[in-house]
Length: 127
Image (tube, rainbow, N blue to C red; front, top):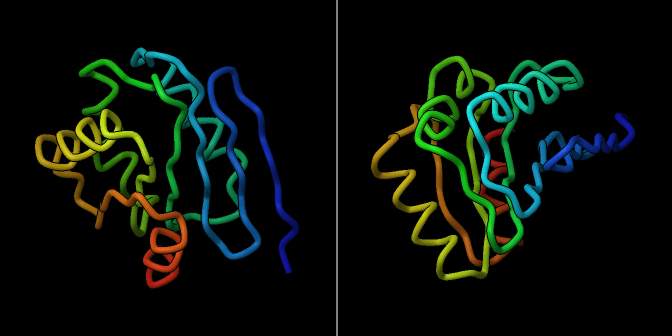
């Protein structure tokens, strides 16, 4: 069985969970395209899986510029994601996440959740 691996980057904590889910927790930061690409490379370089579900959480003020949003929704990124669950209890984050889902239209199943257990259970369907 795989041991949980935690990687700290400048603006995020990446956890490769024992259940096969990659958890990315973003810090309060507004991401540029260069920062987003660097984080993606860190995730890929350390991932024990070629494709896995992604569980995304963030602090209250996490955001990204338009180029970062497009990159995160691109095939280059989403081909490594079997599904993406975005979790937050913040109304602002919910609005941003739903806007991302509707405008970027990632080509992998993507949902927003306000309940962590529901998000994880949904992701487990894509292992």
